[in-house]
Image (tube, rainbow, N blue to C red):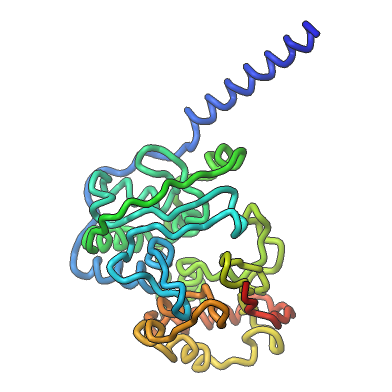
Length: 322
């Protein structure tokens, strides 16, 4: 029993030291850059477009109108955080999107905001839960990330406290190893439509929802083949579509114009006037946001998706009330 006690004590000490080292050393990313990002009108305009219509900043960092189709953000609470990704959704804890309006980020430098978006580390050194797609954002053009920061500095402040994120053990330890320095790449020339479309697909996070994944976020199915079950507790379960160029089960039979028209068929105002009470068909696809993308960018996304491997995967039941 004495030997067992010694062994247990050693294990506890070693585990404690390992945990201490982990929290002291990780995440290992570079210090944020000094100075402010460029805040020209053009930069802010580009940031508005990316944050509202492409990168999902407004989508995740806002509470949602659950009784409207596609659930647009609550008015006067845009970017104020408070959207909850719960255990019922399959999360390892309760992940709450933070307030990213100027009032909440007043003590953050521009470099700290850039680092959070592109490297996944908060001002105080905490790792962000990788539901925030910093690994993808860290491969975009640095000018685009800085444009988002320039825009966020001028959105209306939301004076509303949000609950803190609580991540279960051991995930709260493991995520400390995930952040890394960004590897920014220059945005491709739009004339190279497929390459530019691949860039926009990464920015928009299309693969995040349209690829089957396990509880840890690892892909378990072919990219873009759809079918991932996504639960919105107490309301519905949805399965995103197959958007590979398969002729029968994907978008292989769609023309470029049809693809663009699907996104542009309604505006955000239209979605705000489309009731979807509990039990009726709804979706977490932010059509209201992507409807603001330019036809050129949507066309480029289509051109890129036509280059991915076709996958035969019929997603027949897309919506189930809960």
